[in-house]
Image 1 (spheres, rainbow, N blue to C red):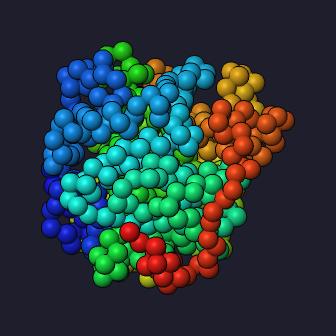
Image 2: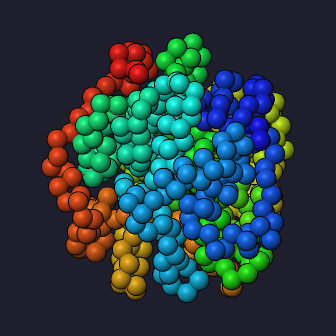
Amino acid sequence: MKYRSTRGGMAPVPFCDILLEGLAPDGGLSLPETLPRLDAETLESWRPLAYPQLAARVLGLFIDDIPADDLLRLTQAAYRPEVFPSIAPLKPLTPGLSLLGLSEGPTLAFKDMAMQFLGQVFEYVLQKRGQTLNILGATSGDTGSAAEYALRGKQGVAVFMLSPHGRMSPFQRAQMYSLQDDNIHNIAVHGVFDECQDIVKALAGDLDFKTRYRLGAVNSINWARIAAQIVYYVWGWLRATQGPGQLVSFAVPSGNFGNILAGHLARQMGLPIHRLVLATNENNVLEEFFRTGVYRPRPASRTFATSSPSMDISRASNFERFVFDLVGQDAARVRALMDQLRQTGQFDLSSLQDQFTARYGFVSGASTHADRLATIRDIHEQTGVLIDPHTADGVQVARAHLDPGVPMLVLETALPAKFADTIVQAIGQEPAVPPGLQDLQQRPQRVVEMACDAQQVADYLRRHAV
């Protein structure tokens, strides 16, 4: 299994090379040269497997430069009971509608599902190669803490995580900034997430800097994140069906397009997925694309601060991987579209709009602050289940796309404890905080504030790189 770039400027390389690279050298994103296929016989043979074993089977389709026995040891370490007391349970809400519980890990967010595997595989590959790596990432709320908890104390790895100053919930900030490990560096940037992400891309795109300081990525630009997320789509399908061929739909709260991209790839591989329901908040650039065919990211000044802050994103890093499929995997056309995006701020693929649903299964919708409050309140009153604001966006949009006889699984984004202010607005009471985290916001915090300036970030990384 070899990997290529969406922009065509990279010679095919194996998994372990792209794991450590992040962005491709030409600025594109890595994808397999060909997707493996999932047939009915294979899927049925996987039904009895526990999550670590299923993860090893699915990831093994994409990784042939790590021995199968070693890969199984890595997934068993990533998904052990001490880390995930419960793994991706189905939580029924209303007839035909369930949550896929992805927030059972150490940071109470779905990002743990992929990031715990990344923590294991990074350390494994670096030790095998005798190398070190400096992870440079950006977070709108959950990626940062998931990465830091997965990589804290790991040998040969330092993490430099940019976050938008004042744009995350107090709980999210405390999860990151309270870590005191020497290899964890939090940088609060005076800007929005998209600007943090721009800094990461600028430094990763400087090939001399990237090579000298051995830069890697944990954002979903890293293919390993996407591959590990494909696993829980397969797991969810196996839990929601009784036999081969049965269709399932998935609703996905989406900001950076990585989570739903994993569903798109699973569907392309043959997993029987009916609809991929993309849910956004008020920052509805992706919803606008699927409604109009025009991709028009907004500037930082027009990226709203909302009550589902992890989706306060206007430029989705993973969208290029879907565009690559949409234009027939034509790397030259992808390059032209990305150039057009830089020059004009948009591109128009409305001529391909008939494929969005008919060929790829995508439908979309947007949710507002009032919608998510009403949805949180409604679900709590009906079922006793309390959901977080991002998951509420997913439920809100999913309800408009239910089909008789087709289970709809909403991918749970986080536990409500991370967004207490919004929960109080919705139901008038504080969400429960899991054991061991009640004092989280009172713990000492370690963070560096910085202007929205790539040079300042580069200088800081130079001083603290491993």
